Image (tube, rainbow, N blue to C red):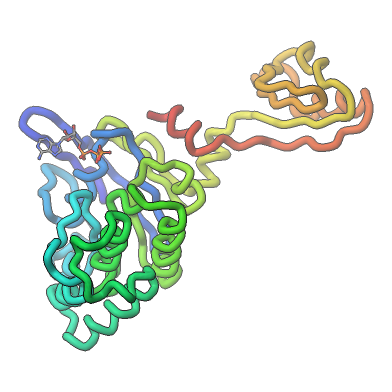
Length: 291
Ligand SMILES: Nc1ncnc2c1ncn2[C@@H]1O[C@H](COP(=O)(O)OP(=O)(O)OP(=O)(O)O)[C@@H](O)[C@H]1O
């Protein structure tokens, strides 16, 4: 999407938002409450109009018939409590253009994958909330979407269920489907996503390959492990100790004084060096830095 903006009344909630989701990649969409994630997703889906900018697919504006082939798991989970799980998912598949037999076959496969095969004939409302959530995932995937957009797909899931859903999403990504998902659970995003988009107050604060972002925001942080106390590091100019525990130290270099090789030489001059490695920031740290 490029240059997307959106107002609600006088309030501008998205301002010139541009990013892309790439085929075969899982893209984590992060932002504080109210940053604009759901609004962005709804604009991609065409549920909500943009006031500027465009949503593009392979460089051309997205059409309504293409949108029919997108898969969406909305934040407000909109399934029918009284309808049977299997019937409901298959029916949604048909609504998206599948014939009856394919819709049924896809439903069966997905429910099995999501470990809900036994529950196909139960009403949705009779399932636990976590299992209802898995049905939502099945509903978003049943028509083999060309793009997947999921608003908080992991919220309320226990760790086993997270793994199950994650496996299903990864499989789709591996087949070449771009997957965009929002989440407040940074630990999950950290292990799951290939790319990241961080939105803050309606503008994009950072985006790109996860590891590339980690090194970009890494600054120059290192961990040194020696045999004796590493306290001498404090006396080197330009070294700021972040954590010191006997022979192990984590420190930052300010770039003006000592360089990493100088530190290494100084350490070797004092004895054995067990390890010397750059330390990349966690997603949590990047998130706090950019928003
Ligand atoms: N229909 C609406 N009318 C008025 N304001 C709205 C509407 N929908 C969203 N907003 C406002 O737009 C801003 C962005 O909301 P949005 O739901 O996109 O945020 P979000 O990043 O998804 O938040 P969360 O993490 O809490 O789900 C918020 O301030 C919200 O109050």
